Amino acid sequence: MDGIHDLGGKQGFGAVVVERDEPVFHAPWERVARAVTFAVVGNVPNASSSLFRHAIERMEPAHYLSSSYYEHWLTAAATLAVEAGLVTRQELAERADGPFPLAGPVRAGDVAIPAGHGARFRVGDRVRVRNLHPPGHTRCPGYVRGKVGVVSRLDGEWTIPDVEAHSPVRVPETLYSVRFDTGELWGDGQQAVTVNVDLWDSYLEGL
Image 1 (cartoon, helix red, strand yellow):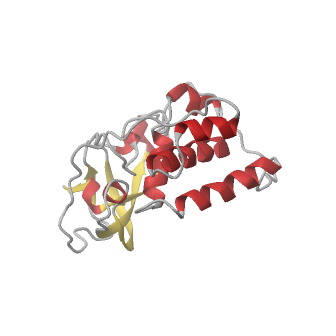
Image 2: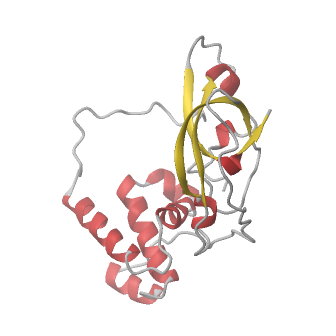
């Protein structure tokens, strides 16, 4: 889906702050949030990392940008718990001593389930990323859609996230590492600088 979470290649959000010697948890509550999230996901039908990521993607944009990493986790966990009937909104609000923000509803529509097939591309093949904008979950970054790159590695078969997030069906498909010149992506004038992106077969078309 096209949402505020897909920030790759976008300007105006300030510098990326790299924290030296960053701890695993910055506060005790983050450790608890992680444990709570795993407990919730373990009790949600057809749970997957794709389902969890999509719950984060559905957060209200201002809330997403103003909250921390583990706040994203808590929002997703609470959203999935309510959607799965593990807890009601009222019970959640009572335990939180006030309204608890949840992510918005799923708007996936009909999920296209492709037929399984072998790898269509080999290392060295030039490919174009399909310029698709699905309403549901996808792992195809917005900044590579419509762009041309070169297959640099085949990483075996993995289930397609776009299907996994919205269906109990699991469709294995070839995952590629595709190399892009930054000039192709952003036209920024950099020379001999490339970016590698992991992309499923369904995201690509041959040239």
